[in-house]
Image 1 (cartoon, helix red, strand yellow):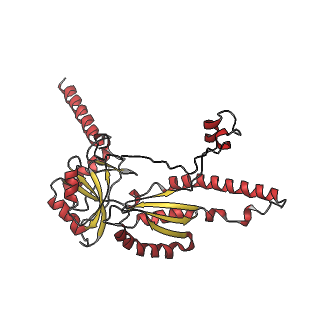
Image 2 (tube, rainbow, N blue to C red):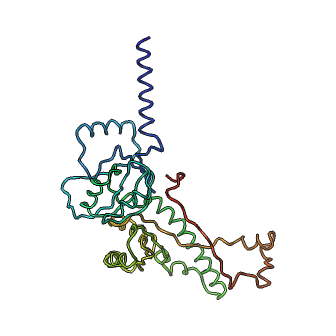
Image 3 (tube, rainbow, N blue to C red):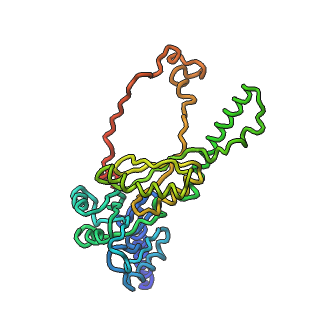
Length: 326
C-alpha cells in the first residue's frame, strides 16, 4: 500500500510539472508571429552564462518540452558597441510606467509581444544597462533572423497561388486581344517573361524612430546595398512611417530572396510580402443592385456610382494593454 501511495504521488508530481512547463499560456513564454520562445529554456544574450546546474536542468526540461525554438547566443566575446535586436521580457504585465522607464535608454522600441515582452534594438552596452537598472526585467534574448519572417516554403506557396492568378488573367486578356485583331496566338505567351515582371511589395517593421528623417538616413545605405545585390529586380525603397518601410521588387523569387536578406539586418524586426492585389467585386455590384441578374445594374445606369463622394472611417485603434490582449 505504501509503494502504491508513493507511485501515485510521483505520478501527480510529474503531471503537475509537465503542466507547469508546457502550459499554453504560461507567462514565461513569448509568442512571436512565427514560433514560441520559452524564456525558462532559452539562453540570455545579456546576463551571466548558464551554470552547469542550469544547463543540466534545462536539458531535463527539454526532455519534457520539445516544441520550442531556442535562442542560441554566446554571451562572451561580444563587442559592447555592437547593435542587437532583442526580446526584453518583464516579470509582470507590461504597462505604461514600464514603457516610460524603457524610453529613457538610447534604444529603438518595437512591438509588444505576449507575454510581457517588447522587441528592442540597441547597443549591447545599453541593453546591459537595462538589465542591470530595471528591476522588472527578467530576461533578454536575441531575436534571431528566422523569427522575423514566415516559413519560406509557406511564403513560396502563398505567393505562387497569386502568381498563377495574375498569369491566368494576363493570358486571358492577351488571348482576347489577339482574337479581336485576328492574329495568331501560338507564340503570345512565350513572348513575355511575365513571372519576372509581376510587382511585389515588401513591408518591414523597424521599431519606433524619432522622426521619418532619421529613419531615411538609416535606410540610405540599405537602399544602395539592395541595388547592388538585386539589380534591376529591385525597384525602390520608401519610408512609410517612423516605424515601417516598404520595398518594391519584381518576381516571386526576388521577393523571397529580399525578404530573407532583410531578416539578417539587425534593425529589422519583421518582414512580410504583400502579393499583387486583385479586385473581388465580381458579384458584389449585382447582389447590391439587382440580386438575381448580374447584367442589371439599375443604380449605375442612373449614374449613382459613388463618384465625387468622400468616405470617412473612424477607428480608435487597439489598446495593446487591454487584459484580452495580454
